Amino acid sequence: MGLTSQLNRHYRLMIRQGKYPICYLCGFPITKYNEVSQDHLICKSIGGKTIQENLCVAHRICNSRRGSLTVQQWFDRQRE
Ligand SMILES: [Zn+2]
Image (tube, rainbow, N blue to C red; front, side, top):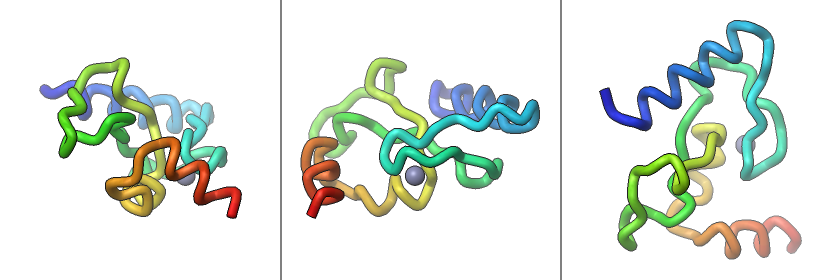
């Protein structure tokens, strides 16, 4: 099993126990199993690796909204 699915499993278990992980992109808790996703801090497209240090838990929707923005660009955009 890949690291991404291992982490997703871990967070889904937390949700089942009522401990909601916080989406690092929007700051809101992730309350549903199917909203859990692992976001690459450094995008895979520019060489980011699938290692724990490069992954953060985020809503699936926030993850796809971020797209290819860097984390910095994402947070700059949130302030506008
Ligand atoms: Zn989010």
